[in-house]
Image (cartoon, rainbow, N blue to C red):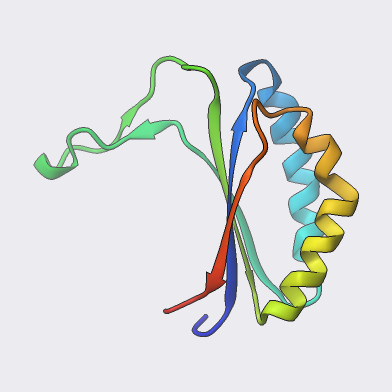
Length: 115
């Protein structure tokens, strides 16, 4: 959606906590969708790399875990005010549970959508 407000989070999950993390974010994502002004929420698990993309090859699956498994979330809103309220809700209700599963605090990047 043009002129929406979006956030991207990077989670670096402890390899011993993958099932617990995926179970938790499935529940959280359902709640995130219910936040006022939410357009969409998506989570992506990074398990592929793009070594041979220039030659037309499909992405190659990663074969081993080094230090952590990266997950990304993309949360889109109709405006930054509703995003602010939803972020407050997220931190209040889920921050502690998520932080226990990570090797370091997650990164947040947010801003206005261009297209």
